[in-house]
Length: 520
Image (cartoon, rainbow, N blue to C red; front, side, top):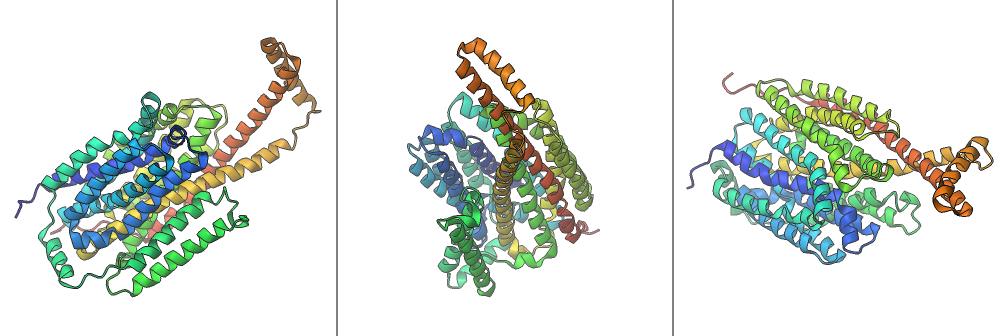
């Protein structure tokens, strides 16, 4: 029997691939337009490139507990890492859109188990009264990957090629595979549980897996394409079909898993009020994070003309501010501070950051965008790191794998839903503000006519063509109106986010305080 490694070394080893997966998600998201353009695809293909990965990752996370219990943490984590490294490399080498979508799908199947398996390894390595700090460090690493991803993705895309967005992740994934093989070993209690499970006939619930896959993929497509397809007014019935698939798939899967003797997705951890509230709060927090990012990206790229690198650079200060915030939160957790008080303080900061961004104007410098964004991130760290560090404090040992899978699934689903809702709200409010701004858009209005004539005069100096100068002046004014509408829509997204964040108060009130230290 292999000698157990230092638990802190084990935690560090499994944190690296989890951070890598989280970073790759945001890196690839930043470069989607460049990826689609590089492969000659249409703008619509960008959605399917992302959805192929997100849908399969969600399914893999949901069922990861079943495989982890029967294969063991290490035997489940190793093939997941190997497959993730292989298909990430193939994504970087893809020669066509359909080929890339296939590799992204397989990448999600392989990589979906990495995050919950890593959490399970950390929970196995530490006793319950010492799990808060390593889980906080693990969460801090994941947040660092998320926040650093846009800047790194933008730089790689502009300086090298979109292919390096994927290829750069392959060497660390391979090194992580070797480190896990050397350091990680399943504890005796887990091996004993695995022996008991394997002593009985193994019944894999294929019908349950199919229902879960249909439900999750339908939900991802419904929230991602609903706005484009005009929601329930879609004349082709695509949105209606996705909605029916999500409700029927997830509803029947829930009914089946609650009645099964050996469910594919063990839902028992949700019976623990503290875990349920923590998991929901974490998913809600990710929805706020990704929803606000869905508004910020178009605002910077379309309104201000930022390149992929500058979109990442403007968001980079959030990561810089987040590092000391993470250290302070971890220190406070180690000192036994009740995480609920940290979450309440973070909620105040988060709501303030949202309201700050909702009051901005179109005349913004990069610093004026980066500062309130950093405030938002600081608040989210104060909310989510204590939430993760204490989520499993009352979960029984035999339910750890299932709880980790459910926690990761809600986090990932929250991010996907938040992204879709943020983009939908941005587009809807953009249409509203364009209409309202256009109500006074009359060519006979003296002020508008004066502005047009002044612009036409400047364009005439450059072109020497009066007709072209007049048309260019109207185009410039129309662009100004559209930009103002987009900025007002983005500010509306942040205003809604501020009020929505207050919903976390209910979930925080459902949580318990920190457990008493062993022997005290």
